[in-house]
Length: 148
Image (tube, rainbow, N blue to C red; front, side):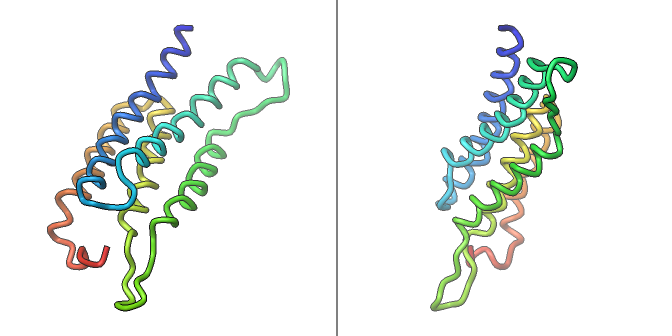
């Protein structure tokens, strides 16, 4: 029970950090906002903690279950990349690409959720701060911001 509480705490923290990123996208009026980012971050974290819980519940001496952390990371990265592609589009009139930054923020949110899932709270929090800085501050230096 205490172990499950620790795993749930990880999912909660991933949700909080993801909410900060989603709020930024939401406040910028982008198509994928608060709920999307929270769901992506928590789901990525859940993939990790579920893998960890399964590995502990079925030790390799009792069953032929082997959890590969890199396989979890790869599966989430590919799956979320597919999800992010849904917010990218090209306008036919001006032939401009829209949604790339939001797609990238969804992908980064998944990476942050994975990081929390592995119990690396400090790293995930620092990454979230850097991602927010990138989304909020660096936009001032982006000459193509009218294109997204």
